[in-house]
Every structure is written in structure tokens, then in C-alpha cells.
Length: 335
Length: 224
Image 1 (cartoon, rainbow over the protein chains, first blue to last red):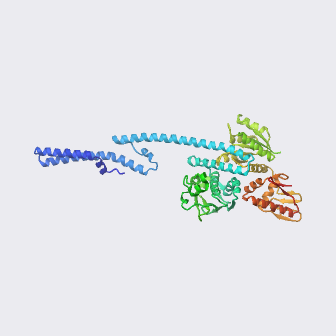
Image 2 (cartoon, rainbow over the protein chains, first blue to last red; image 1 turned 120 degrees about the vertical axis):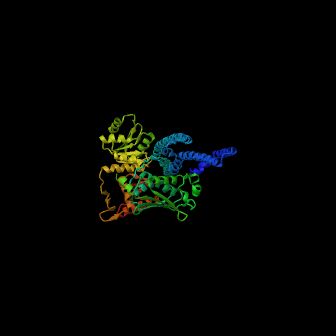
């Protein structure tokens, strides 16, 4: 979109046509009265010049407003804020546009505020509800239940956690707490939580080099690693190895399994929302929600970690979490 | 007998906790009068002398953290907070206000017992050597010896033996042993546990104690 004099004239083709016709009629009329040609030419040129001046004045009044409007909209990230950058124009159609945009903007903002308040309410209730739901699960796991039951309860708890963190990853509320945490401890918590299911499937666990400190939120990280471990278990791993690799400015946590892996064509999409892929459909029936890795990716983005996934030999999966060693974190932690 | 006060609003959770603790040979007392104002509630809790308090963070009418602060003003009884929160901040606040430990719902019973034992143990200093029949068990160097011979134990064997020694003459379930092993970053499976137990038995036998560890089918192991 561009606001140029050419387009401005084009918009006034009808007026221009009418004026051209009027001038032609005037010229013919004057000719009929035997007015000298010089005088006719002068009159026509004089009238044309006056009209041109009027047009230019009209053009410049509009041009500055519309050019600003177009340019600011192009440059703004949040395009709906454009009205804040403009002054109310001094010509009628601009004023109408400005006032109506203002009303539309205001009603849109009310709608958005209303919706986001409703969403906040819902998330708050959801979180409260999840904490309530954890009490009976907790009571059940204290009542003498066998490993089968414990496994089911752990699965249920895992689903609750998933929705909890999904709600959190959406919410702007930042309730994470960065501190120096030991990977060894986080991994221990996750493995302990999944002990029954790991033993039920007779999965061998290898951990190495985890005696490393990274900056992260322990709970969120626990959730992330838990999701990754759940995936390994779900997709037929018989052995899972968890290791850390500390480099100069970053630390990598690598989780490798020997499960069915991920087909190459599905790999780029595994972090997409609701993507289940060939394995999800074939292996888990209806049990793959396609949300696990999506939430993991989201949380990692919020925490500033990187997550990548590879399936090098068409079998087995290797997930790498990268923790960057920013000075920023150090400052935050030492505060 | 060690006495534990349970402060938890959910009735079935309270019963389940009490049962778990009874089975582990703890005496329990419950407090469920949450209509009281915080200071009176704390008074009621402290009227019953206990060795440890399990305190739920989310209580009706009360904030566990505030109760904890009031408790700490007049008592040094160890407190373990039960949190259902998945946010680190709550737990940091709990520790900051003087809780000795926390555990998040849902937890497995063995893990709770492990936390309780750890907190209780913190109070009394740990012996570094334990005498058992005519053997000396050195917890620091991880070895068992009789007057003639010393045998070194592996880390796994040591962990298992420590649990058995804490419960002499009592049945220790495989589940308990597993929890403790996994808690110590030894992620072994069922077969490996059996192997470790039989190695431990062989070592005891070499030092002249044949029947130190007996198995009770379906229940666990007993050290006597």
C-alpha cells in the first residue's frame, strides 16, 4: 500500500472528468462568442491552475496522515496499537476513520481483557483443582497397593502434571525459580518416581557423569525429564542411558534409549502441538495426545534451554537438553 | 516409641498416613480441628508432645507456612511439610521458615518413611561402626570384619546392609530396599537386588555367620 499523488488523482477520475467536460463546454461557449483564443487559453489555464492548487492542498492534508498510518502499521509488532501513534486528522474522512477505528479498537480490547481474565480464572481454578486431585491420588498410593496399582497411579499423576504445566506454559505468570541445581538429584527424583513402571518393563538404567550443576528450575526440569523418560518407556525402550556433558559455556543432558525410534519424516514435527506421527498412532492407539513434547519445547523455551531430538539409526531416540551458561543466570542466582 | 503428629485436612489421606506410619512402628496423633484460629491450633498441636510433625501446606482456613512460623516460635520439633505444589517457591518458603524437609504429593510410602528416618536421624549422631554378633561393621570404610578377617562391601551391599541394620529383627521388604537403593542413585532391577542379597549372605557366611540374613517369602528379608 502506498499513498501517492498518482493514486490520489486516480481516485478523483470522475471529478477530473466532470471538470474537463465543463472546461471544454466553457471553451466552446467562449469560442461561439468570438472571444480571442489567447483569452480562452488563459482562462482555461488559470482555472486549471486553481483547481490543481486546491487538489494539492487536499492531497497534502491527507498524505501525512495516511503515510504515517501505513508506515506505522508496517513497523509495529502489535499492529492494533497503531492508533496510539497517530494524531486525530483535520479532514472529515480521516476523522471518521480515526474515530471508528478507535471504537473498534476499544471494543476489541474489552473483549480481549474479558477473555484473558476468563482464561486466568480458568487456569487458577485448574491449578487448584489439580492440587486437590493430587490428595486422593496420594492417599491411594499410601494405601497398600501393589506395583500394578502404583504404576497406574503414577500414570494418572503424570497426566495431571502434564495439564498443570501446559496451563503454566500458557500463562504469562512466571512462577519459576532459577537456582543452581544438581542434575544428579533431579534425575534421581524422576527415576524414583518411575521405579515401578521401569521395573515392570525390566528397563535397564545407566547414568553417568551427572555430577553437574546447572541453572534451572528444579520442578520444571523434573517435569521435562519425566516427559522424556515417559516417552522412552512408552516407545519400547529396553535400556535408557542418561548422561551429562559439560562444555565451556553450556551443559548437555543426553537421554538415549533403544526403543523404536522416530521415522525421519516425522522428526521435524515431533515438537508440534497435537502431532502424534506414525508411532503415536501405531504404538499407543489412542493414548498419544501429542502434547508431551510440545509442552516440553514450550517450557524449555521459557527457561532458556534448548531441546533437540534425533533418531540416528532409525531405531532408538536421543534427546539432548542444552543448558546455557549465561552470566545473567549467575547474577540472578547469586542475588 | 517415636511419635509423629499428622496435620492434614483430608480424612482418607490422614488415615492412610496413620496406617503407613503404624506399620512402620511409629505412634501417631492427628490434629483436625481446623476451625481454630492459628495460634490456638498451634497450641493444640504442641499440647501433644511429638518427635516429628507432618504438616500439610494447604489446610482449610490456614496457610501451612504461617502455622509453621508460629510453631517454630515455641518449638524445635522437626517438621516435614507435605506439599501438593509443583512450584519450587512454596518449598523454598517452607524450608526458609524452618521446615526440616518437604515431600510433594503424591509420594510413595517408602519414600516418606525414608524422609522421616533421615530427619529423625539428623538429631542423633550416627555411629561409624556397628557391632553385630562377633562382627564389626565399619560404615565409613564400607567393610565388615571379624577378629581374623576383613571383607570389603560394594556400594549396593553397603546400602542394603545399612537398611537391615536400622531394622534388626524386623522384616524389611524388597520394596524398601529398592527405594533406598534408587534413592542412592543405584538404579538396579529386581534380579540385581537378589544377586546383591546373596552376595551379602556369602560374605557373612565367609565370616562365620551363616544365617544372618533370612528371607521370608513374599515379605522380604530379616537380619538377626
